[in-house]
Amino acid sequence: MAMLWYNILVKDARGVAERLCHKKAKGIRGAIVTTQFMIGTFFLVAGIAYGLYMARSIWTDREWLRNAPGNLGTVMGLEAVVYFLCTIGVSDFLLNTIICQRLKLVGPEAQPDCNITATIVPSGIIAFVYLRDSASVDGLLLVLFIVCLIIGSIVGSQVVGHMKGDIIRKAMVVFLCVTLVCLVVRMILSAGAAPTATSLGGWKLAMMGLTAFVAGFINMLGIPAKPLIATVSLLLGLSPITTLAVTLGGLPTSCLVGGLRVMPKKNYSPKLILSAMTAGSLAAIAGCLMAISVNATVLNVMLLIVIAVAIVSLIKR
Image 1 (cartoon, rainbow, N blue to C red):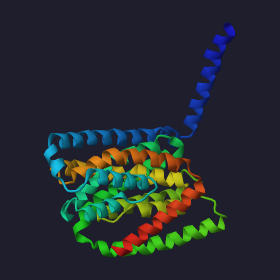
Image 2 (spheres, rainbow, N blue to C red; image 1 turned 45 degrees about the horizontal axis):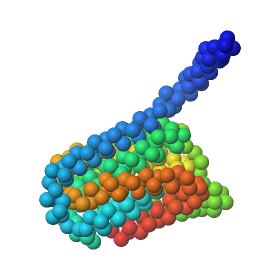
Image 3 (cartoon, rainbow, N blue to C red; image 1 turned 90 degrees about the vertical axis):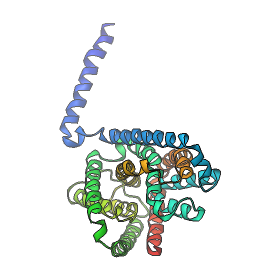
Image 4 (tube, rainbow, N blue to C red; image 1 turned 180 degrees about the vertical axis):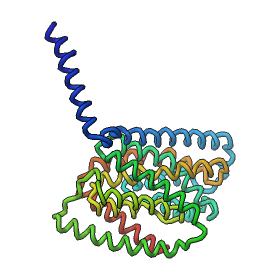
């Protein structure tokens, strides 16, 4: 019995002390090791709160839901596909725009509001799944990314009416093409091996901050930011899972802010929103679990394909 208490009180206490000393020695990075989980939890809780608000809005106006254009079953099936693909970096804004145009769910003027309200709940779930494990991405990198993204979004929203989005879009296409070629060459030279880093330092960390700022800026101009973030992340050596964690774990920030403005206006398709919150959310969970379990090299190739498709879509626009 004495030996048992010795193990509990002395050895366990010694182990705790050693872990605390190790954590202190890690400095800032160790101090924010749980930041990933807290950020993911915040996005999840905020998404659920938004979902409850929108569900109540739709429930209290069921006539609006019944009279809205489109077949609910068809829209649910499509939204499941959209948010399954979204978990590997495909732009849900782009796919939902195509769905709304083909099914005539909303008019062009309501499309931005529809995109924002549809993505909030699934994006919150995706962010939580990717960020719940602190090993997927370094906390300092994630915090820097989100802060720079917010600053870029604020600056972009101020100058959105004074800049030509077409010029920026063309420049982005050229940049993505060059970086995509670099990524393919890098993959060939490394015999197909995927990058493995989960953190960045020095000039690479600064470059990631600049990328986040630019991503937030162009997002306010209606240009998809996911392809830019994914290409730069992979080029800087971040692993495919870390690339997805940064991209999908940080971007919900702008959607949450935008949701405060657009939700009360109800300028969106209730069938699309309901489908995204239900079928889309379930598909998002399945997609995240699949992406996490996929071989890193396979996931790296999938991301390169997604980037190539994004380039084609930007050219067509």
